[in-house]
Length: 257
Image (cartoon, rainbow, N blue to C red):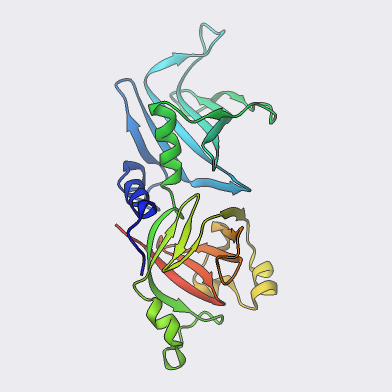
């Protein structure tokens, strides 16, 4: 079973953040509310590249703001993409400004060679934590498993798989755990899936697993030899649960509250 460690405590802290309280229910989740503005994060915008993850944040102002250099153009909403590194750095990406009618009044995309900054200060730290609290991050519980054909086979269930039920699975930036097995050097990579591609690689259709191709997938690699398999696959389900390819079988995970 999952041991109570500092890793566990950190994940429990992330689960308590307001931004993660209603995962997969609303498009935008509240990060924090100020006197003159509120900030939300879009769970569907979370995207992974090697050692980098990014998310889109929405800032809604209580009063119209004036665009710098313009005396007449105003905006009430800012949509900003922020990239984070696994070692605690960040840089701001595309920014879109909207007026009170939802019309774009300005859009900008910074140069990709811009410098990374250290995550520090209360606001930036909360944005980092909010992104790190989104699915698939957090503590999960194994509630079942599915064979390659997408149908549970209770008559031929392996003892090891049966014993996995109820096991904790922890997914974080710097450590992943499935029961007692740990990976101290994980790497997440977002991947757009198609039914045809998945069928060619796995021999089954996504729909047989209850997965929508439009939701994409996350490749999870372990940079060390701590795991039996160096690569896994995370597939989001419409219910908010996850399917995780583990030792050739898809185990179903439910978010722990």
